[in-house]
Length: 156
Image (cartoon, rainbow, N blue to C red; front, side, top):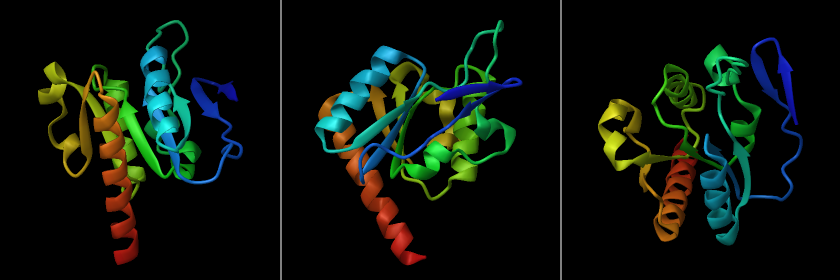
């Protein structure tokens, strides 16, 4: 459920529909997000979509991550697949905040080849897939990220 509170879009996460493993897909393009969700569901994940902040000047909606809050959807996920990009300051801020506020969360970042150079250090220590994403590559990246996250959790 989405509620607008001022200029911040608040997501009411509620319970995930299924038990683990849970994947959160962040993508501004609904069609691509649905494709990614279909791939992940086919791999046995329960998946949800977050479209990220709106780019509309008429009704700007900010992601709670960019306001310094932790995201309840991210907290409930076992892995995050982010395809928001860094084409705007707001989208870049979401990825930066995701890495800062949820540092231990397994993360896969989907990047168009031509934009790879724009990410810099934001791609350090994350799994990267090139858009358009091949199903086998996404499944492998997600499984690798989840396995690496489990190892880090066990070491703590």
